[in-house]
Structures are given as C-alpha cells and as structure tokens.
Image 1 (cartoon, one colour):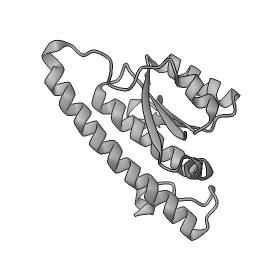
Image 2: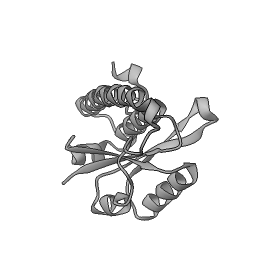
Image 3: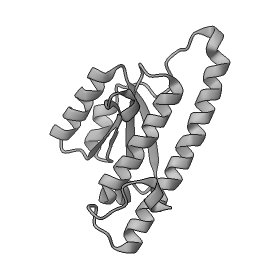
Image 4: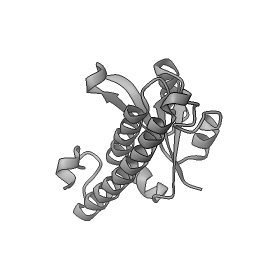
Length: 158
C-alpha cells in the first residue's frame, strides 16, 4: 500500500501542529512530484514525534535510508523544524511504526471539547491541503514541468 507519512511535533498546540502538517505535505508535493504520483493519493498517515530533537532524528534517519523527505520550517517560530513528510516506501512504514497517531495524545479533561473542535478543524484543513496538492501535481504534469520548474507556492497553482 502507498502511504504518505507526515510527522508533526507533539509539543506544539493541536491547531498549529495540523497547519504544519499541511505545509509539510504541500512542500513534499512540490519537491517530489514523482513520489506523489507513486503515492496516488491513497493513504495519508499523520503521526507525532515528541519534540523537535526527535523530529530531526526522523528526518536524518529517513534521508540515510533513501526515503524522499520534505522538511517544513515555520518562519513564525524562528525557522524551527515543525513537520516532515516522508515518501511512500516500504522503509517508511517501518520507520514510523512506533509513533502515535497525530492528536491521539490525551488532553487535559477541561479542554476536551476545545481539542475536539481543533481536531475537526484540522481534519478539514488537511482535506483542503490534499485538494491543493492534487491541483499542484496536475498543473505540473499538464505543463510538462520538471520538479525544478514546478510552482513553489499555492498562489502559483491557483
């Protein structure tokens, strides 16, 4: 099965974590159009690393294993690494198998409903990002562009 993995940071607030996952997915689509075609929009798996250090470890490990990687660094957080997207390979599933699903960490009881709203909003946002990814890949293929000539921002796709 083709699975695109997005690894976010569990130490970020839920809404920010989801936005960073969307950025990483879109970056992956622009940086690795062949891997996106291989993925074919089958399964999108969102998981969490506990913190920035562990996320860096996953990114470097994936690169050493030859897995296509797109890193997202948030400008509003001093360009910290906040999420990565890992391409669909058999090694990707093995690498990510021990990570918890995104937003599955227990939340404090009094914030439960607020967290549920954030999760629902995050899922909607990721659906919108998936549509942008499909549009970017389609436009890149239609225009016969190489990855170097591919659009680099959502505004260029629209």
